[in-house]
Every structure is written in structure tokens, then in C-alpha cells.
Image 1 (tube, rainbow, N blue to C red):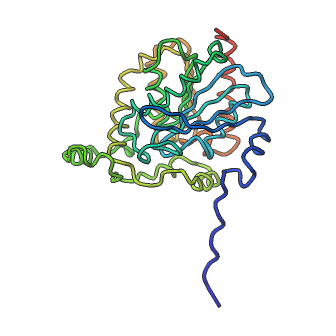
Image 2 (cartoon, rainbow, N blue to C red):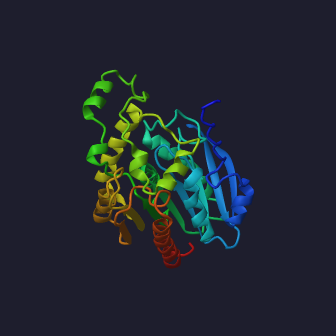
Image 3 (tube, helix red, strand yellow):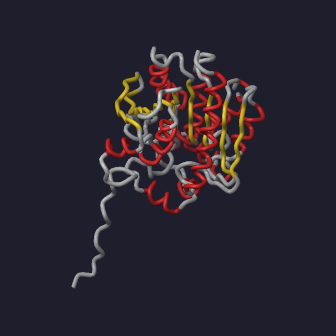
Length: 323
């Protein structure tokens, strides 16, 4: 008699299971369109989420975190905003998801931000959207990319900024070893793309709900290799750069953080709130929550974060209105 264990069940094509995509999106009262956008730096995968039951009152441009993509559970954020009446546009960063580029290599964050921004601006400047409020949203390392996009943009083009656990300050135990970076740097850039940095177990530090952890682990496009040398070098540099330029932020913003975030220090949001020049700024700290506020917490916690985000963005649309 064979004692071999049966093979594990196949991974469903989407986080919600086997329901066809169009049927699922319709059940959520949104319309989803997938496409690719050509840029000088490579082709990037993009998604559009439009509300089925509401007139469009604004646009939101979303950027995911390190190793993730705009599909799988990140869509939970996109779908929620669309259900509230916003046209949502999201792009897989270069090297992530279904976009071109070396997997999870963030060696030039300015270029990565500019590449996504070129898509976002092509939508933002459409005649049908030019008069509507427009917001940038970034999660985790996508928050750092979003801040770079803001710095790269013309003044006044964005109505506001939304950050979910942005990576502006790296916790001490998550920082790359400067000795390692120095040693690899002696190789004159040859090692920059090597996946040779220690694995800091970021997923376990990001997701508090064990059931959500299982779902996220099933994402076939999630990067599971070790961090690349150039990625860690660049994230360290970008965090220091953003910290030195917080005072340049003048747009209204909401920044949300869990107090038990072990991947992006809560100081990221606290420092932004303290140093930004914006007159309209909001800081939300969630006691005991981890890094992934919407994808990785119990539903009641995620719903609380989303509720605060909805209240904030709806208030800004009401306050700043159409152009």
C-alpha cells in the first residue's frame, strides 16, 4: 500500500478562488480592465477599476509594495475605492508582477517611480478626468515610490496623497548591513543584481492574520527570493532622501500605520506628519496592527482602516471639489 501523501490542491487562479474574473468583479460592482503600457524603460502591466453603481467623483493612482503586484490581495484596496465612486488605476512596478524588468530589482527607484508616473499622468490628463480631484496612493515601498512620483510631478497636479504603512524609515533590525553593501560595492556594480542579501522574513512581519498569510503565500507572482544587493542599497538611499525632503510636501495627505509594524517603522508616518509643510495633514496610528493594514489584518481591522480612508478622501473631494 502506498504511503505517499496526496498532492496538494492546485492554487486557484485568484485569491477569491475559481470564479471567473469578470463574474467576480461584477459581483463587487466594479468593472476591471487589464492592459500594458509602453514606456522607454519597459512595458508595465496596468489595471483600471471603475464603479458600476456610482458616477466617478475622482481618480486614485495606486502603487503596491516590494515583491507584490496589483493583482491578488492588493486588489482589495482597488476594489474598495472603486466601490466608493473612484476611478482607480494601478500599475505593477518595473520588475514586479506582470511588468517587464529583472524580478524585484529596485536599483533605481527614481526610474521606477517615473515609469509608473508616466502611465498615471497619461490617465490623469485625459479630458474626462482633468477637472476631477486626483490622488496618489502608495503602500509600503510603494509609498516611497509614490513620494518620489509626487516630487517628480508638476505642482498642484495631485489633490492629495494617501499612504498605507509607507517605507520612509527602515527599522534597525531590517536595515541592510552596510558592511555587506560596502563589500559588494567593491565589485564595481557587478553584484548589484545579485539576490544575495539576507532574507529578513518580511512576509511574516507584515501579515497578522494567519488565514490572510496563507492566501498571500498563494500569489503566483509574489517574489520569494532573497533581496537583491542593489534593491537594499537603493531603499536605504531613498529613505534617507525622502526624510531629508519631507518639508517639500505641501499637498493634503493621510498617512496610516500600525504601531507593531516590523517592516516599515511607524516613525515613517510620524516624521512625515511632523515635518511636512502641508496645512491639511492627517496621521492615523492603529494600535497593535502589523505592516499590511488592509491585506493582512483581521477583517474588522482592515474595515476600520478602509473606513478612515473613505472618510478622508470623501471629505477632500467635498472640500477641494472639481477644478
